[in-house]
Length: 314
Image: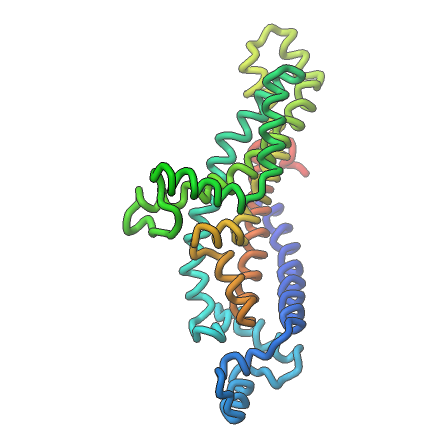
C-alpha cells in the first residue's frame, strides 16, 4: 500500500504544477487592471505605480508566476487585492463552511442514492425499479437554484420550519447550524443521490449477473447475504470512485446554492474574487480545490484496496 501511495503522490506533483500554471495564465486573460481597482476612484499615478511594484505586476508573467510559486511553497498564497487579507486566512475561514455543506450533502446522497440503487437493481423490471428511475431522472433534471428557491418559499416562508438563509458556525450553536445548512445540503444531496442511484443500479445489475452470484444462490444462501455481502462489496469500487469525485466537486464550492442560501463558502468567495479581479484569491482557491481532488482520489485508491483485496498486488 505504501508503494501505491508513493506512486500516486509522484503523479500528483506534476498535476498540481500544470494546474497552477493554467490557473495563473488564465487569470492574466481576464479583462481589467487589478492595480487600478485597488487604487480606487482617484487613481493617483504614484499610488498605481506603487501597487504595481508591490505586487510585481510590472514583471513578465513567468516572473510573476515564479514569485507566486515560491511563496506558495512556504505556505503563503498571497494577499487579497480587495481586502488586504491573507489568502490562507480566507481559506481557513471559508473551508470549514464548505466542508460542512459537502459532508451533509454527501450523507443525504448516500442515505438515499445507494439503498435506492440496490433496491432498483434487485427488483429490476418491476414497478419499484420504474419509480426509482423516474425519481432519479427528476433529481438530475431539476435545477438546483429552482429547487432551492422552492424550498425557501415552502419550508421557510409558508411553514416556517427552517431558516431561509444564512450560516451559523457549529461552535456557536450546533443545532441551529444544522438547521441553516439542512436545506442547501438537501438541494445538493438530491442531485448527488440521483447520480449515485443510477451508478449503484448499473454496478449492481452487472454484479448480480455474475457466475459466482448464481453459484451463491444455488448453494441456498439467503437473498440479503448474496446482495449485501457478495454483490455490494464488489460493486462498491465504481461507487467509491464516484463518491470521491462528487465530494471533491463539492469542495470546489456549490456556487449557485451558496448564493441562494447566502452561505459564506468557497463558491461565494470565488465568485466575488472573479468579479473584483482578485487574482490571488482565485489562484489560491483553485489550487486548494485541485489539491483536494487529488487527496480524495488518493483516498479512493486506498479504499479500493480495503474493499477489494485482489487489487493489493496491482
